[in-house]
Amino acid sequence: MKNFLVIGNPIQHSLSPKLHTFWINQNNIDAHYEKKQIEENEISKVIQEIKDEKLSGINITVPYKKSVIPFLEQLSETAKITQSVNTVYKKDNRIVGDNTDVAGFIKSLEDINVKGKSVLILGAGGVVSSIIHGCYLLGVKNIFVSNRTESKVDDLITFFSRVKKINWGEDVLCDLIINSTSVGLKKDDNLNIDLSTYKRTIFYDVIYSSRTNFLAQGESMGNKIIDGKKMFVYQAQEAFKIWHNISPTVNQEVMELLI
Ligand code: ATR
Image (cartoon, rainbow, N blue to C red; front, side, top):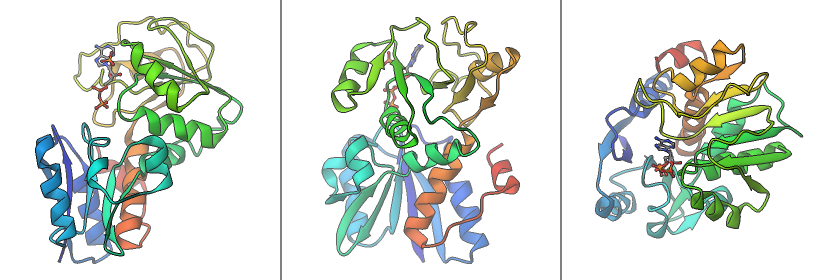
């Protein structure tokens, strides 16, 4: 039996075990997938378990996608560019870190053409480098980033020189606005910025666990909305492919596992 884990802190709300277990069963794979909340000083112990083949792979979520990197022996190109790792496994006796969030983000926009368009990203936390790299790959023309703590946007610009900083709360003409902040994780959370000028703009929220006020506002203004479920499912699909060499099905039944 192969063992897999998702690690993070907090982790209790992660739907990765549910999703991976569904696909494991569907594909008759002899494997087990669990979640585990860890402290930062326990990362090396978990990686050692992959070295010892007690674990076949792990997913990493907030807040360890960057801090896991020093414990790895090889990074995929995407993980290098984004400095963010969400999938780890052992290959040719080396511990490899990959990033499937970028592929998940790109696939989540499969029905939308953002080539040559303008995107505003709200927030500058761990997931944003993956979104920006995804925007580069999709040929987005203007990538604006706005964060409450503006210095974090400056840090991002040192790696992604095409990013343009927008002051927090200031508006800008864009075709797609993405909430990548943690605001919305709690039901009553509000960004407290004026979004009323974003008409004919697609509202995208990275949060997948609930319907956010951000999306509710976008929808009430008549805009198309996309929640974080698609990105979440597609990053998991990519991780599953890496570990099991099978591309698991994504359909309505799978999406409903996340409700
Ligand atoms: P991660 O682990 O993903 O990096 P994080 O650093 O906590 O998580 O990032 C969360 C994001 O949500 C940040 O962009 C944060 O803004 P700050 O950099 O100013 O902290 C943003 N965020 C959290 N609470 C917020 C709030 N009440 N209003 C606006 N932005 C908020």
